[in-house]
Length: 148
Length: 171
Image 1: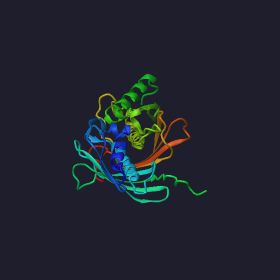
Image 2 (image 1 turned 90 degrees about the vertical axis):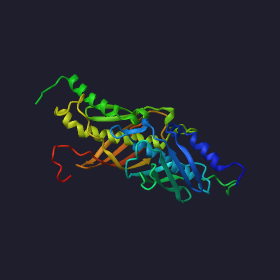
Image 3 (image 1 turned 60 degrees about the vertical axis):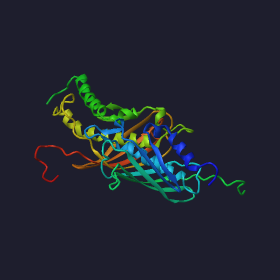
């Protein structure tokens, strides 16, 4: 492992993203094209006042961030990534009051695209609340002293 | 049938319902989304706020903020469209009647076309199909130029059951 701990750098990087910070996301695990990010329940994020359920958009922000983190941690070490598209299936309402946790993995990369799958759970790890699939850009560093 | 109600009465009624519809959802307030109305056409506005940034170096909007904005716009449009006829027919009182439950998102697919700049963003949703239970919505968002979308999305939603009292046999 290089002297700087890539996981620590990734954690600082993700926790410095303003919108992720506004949603109090925390990076729990990262490495090898896989990331786990979670977010506490927050009354400000409620999308349905009748039930107190968190808005789908907040869950989607969590899954998007987690997907991007998974891509950045890929062993091919991209220098940057951006979401091309992301589809989220909402399988059930997340229980009010519970933390939401997402795991994303970058299951395939090409020269310029990374394909990602993600799942989200509340505190009941047996029943996912949402699943996502997405494509992200995969920007590789230009080879040093590149061929003409 | 009322003919030619005073314009202010009409506007007050419509704006009261819209204000209640968006005022009750905490996440809409968290994002800072407001809605412009022209007749029944809604345009959602997401004023730029530094907390919405996803890439501090570029000051680009976070993809999750963009997705949230698009999903909020879709849900507001669906609720608004489903209430409009009753509102105009005088069946519901916009100030006092309980609002029906909000549609629930089944799936939502966001297409990021270009990065969101540190400026206000706008979005309009179009309901492509709205049945008794399921609705399909397309939503587009832009910033400076209406014709240069920075994101678009398609979503499917489960509509709240219409309580036409006891008329739910095939629901």
